[in-house]
Structure formats: structure tokens, C-alpha cells
Image (cartoon, rainbow, N blue to C red):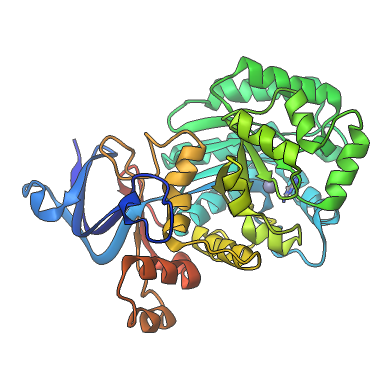
Length: 427
Ligand code: GUN
Ligand code: ZN
């Protein structure tokens, strides 16, 4: 048995904060320790209360917390980030689809998978949820690399059988068969979990949506991810393809794709009916602030969505998004809320990146906090990592202020170490 204590200031959330001053929502210990045994957290608490016969890795004065979770990004879009001058549909056609076609080559997929998980861990993200390309081999590359590093990773090959270049099209039957093969191979293997991934209604025929419906019905422990109401032209085009449905969400509803394991990327321009169906079905709206700003899609109304009872997760949406960092992501989330005259507190932001996203995935007994028995995916953060941060930190007196400095000025340089199942793994 391998056992270690990670010593430092420790922060872990117990529940969703109810306001900026809800200090009962988290546990913060000035001189704390986390006992890690065989990749799991055995205990966390005051350092002086922990056994004194275990090797100690001293991370003081840095902050230890659960690794970040990124609930929506695109593994084949690493070379799309920062593509100029287009909104969603042109951005897909001009930049994204050509980049994804290259994933027909397993060697390319394997090379990018290495870079992808390097970038996740460099930024403190220990659990990503990824769309792979349409090619089965891209999902193989994704899960194989995650398994090699023992990372808890969720993902799936996209289903798309129309409105894209030939090199990116499957068929309803091949999408069904390939997804089934991938589920058999990767779902619940080690730390991998499979996500059935119809890309969005525009790129799936009704026949393919029926196949997605069958996959979801036949695999109740798998997740489902897609895109919803990101951009006005996208919505209009979608409704022209599916005119018999009441609205965009109504298409996914009709094909039985909604539920507590359904992750709906963007969900920006929802009508009242869509909001209530999202809430009734316990589906998750995924807020992707850097992408929503960069592609010019719109301002996600976080407060309204939450008050309507819709579950919310946060994500980078790489490569529409502009940063791999969940810190940068929540900085932009804060600005999106500011533009709507609302505040997004640092306590809530850090909750969202950790326990909030874990709950959105129903994985809070495994990841997203430092509770006994959870997986030891832990990050070490330094809020003084750059000269500008160190100068700003001179005036900081509370943990909330420190978190806000991390969120506003931090990035991968603030991530001192990333532990994956107890093993130091920052590249
Ligand atoms: N909608 C359908 N596919 C995509 C994608 O790859 N990125 C984003 N941002 N939206 C999408
Ligand atoms: Zn996306």
C-alpha cells in the first residue's frame, strides 16, 4: 500500500453556496493534510490530527483542493483554438470540420490525445468530458491515453450523418454499431465513462436521432451530450430541418435524449417551455463562457437558469473556447454575469469547477471534493504565481479574495501540481 500526506491549506466544498458569504458551504483549513492511500483519499483534516508515521509532501503555503472538472470540450479541436472572424455555422464549416477530418488518421489522433491530456493536467483539470471526432479511432485514442495516465475521463465519438463534409459522415447504422463497440470497450473500464454524442440536430437525420435514442435507452449508465441553442442562425436552421417540433429542445425531448445524464452544451437562447422541460427532466445546461464570447454566441443567463431549477455545469468548450484553464473560464463567466448586472462569487465559481461539476455528472461520491473514500485527484494552487499576482496578493486577507485573485489572474502557472489518483502528474 502506498500512503502519503499532502500538507497545505485545504479547501473543499460540502454543498452549493447560497451566496457570496455562505462560508458554511465549504471547509477551509489553514494547516491541513490529505491522507492519500492507493489513489484514494483516506482522510483530510487538521494536519496535527493526522498520523505522524506517514511520508509528508509539504505544499505549504499553497492551496490544495479537488481537481477541476471540464464538462464540455472537443478533443479534436486543439488546432482550432483562436480561429478568426466567424460565428458558429461558418466557424464549424471553415475551421472545425477540416480539423476534425484529420482524425481519420489514428497516428494524428494519438498524437493529439497526448497533447490534450498534457494540457488538461497542466491546467489542473483532472476530469474532462470530451466530444471526439466522428471516427471510432479518435475515441479509442482518447480513452487509451486517459487509461495510460489513469485519468477519470468521459467522452464519445460524435454521431453525424449530414450537413458536413464526406470525411466526417457516418450513417445511422454505423453510428449505432461504432458507439456500441466503443461502449463495450471503454465504458466503466478503469476510470473511463462513455458519453453517447449526437453532435447536434443539424448534423443528424431523424433516422440517426432514432439510433441515438436506442443507444441512450439501451445504455442507461452512459451519458449523453449534444449542443443546444447556441446561436440564432443555428436555431433557425435547426427548426427548418425539424419543423414539426415545438422548439430546439423539443427535438431532443422527442427522441428521448433528456434526463439527469444529459449534458446540453451552451443552452443560451432557451424559451420558457425549454427551461421548464430542462428542469423537469433534470438535464444539465453547460455554460461555456469563453466560447460563447469568442464565437459571439450570446450571454448565458446563469442566475435565471439556476432559479428556473435547471442544473448547470461549466466548461471550456475548447476549441470554440479560448483557454484550457477552468480559472480563465470562470473569469469570463464572471464577466458574462457582470454584463447582465449580476455577480458570480468566487466561492460559487470554485464550487462550480469542482463539486458543482461533479454533481452535474452524478460523480460527487468519486470526484470534486476531498471526502474520505473519493479518488485522490487533487490540485495545488499558488495565488502568487506571477509577479502581478504576488503584488495583488499583498492586499488579500480572506480565502474568498484569494480565490478571486486566482480566478481573475490565474492560469496554468498557478497550478503547482496536479495529482491524478494520488500520483503527481503535472507535465
Ligand atoms: N455545435 C455543433 N458542433 C459544435 C462544436 O464543435 N462547437 C461548438 N461550440 N458548437 C457546436
Ligand atoms: Zn461544443
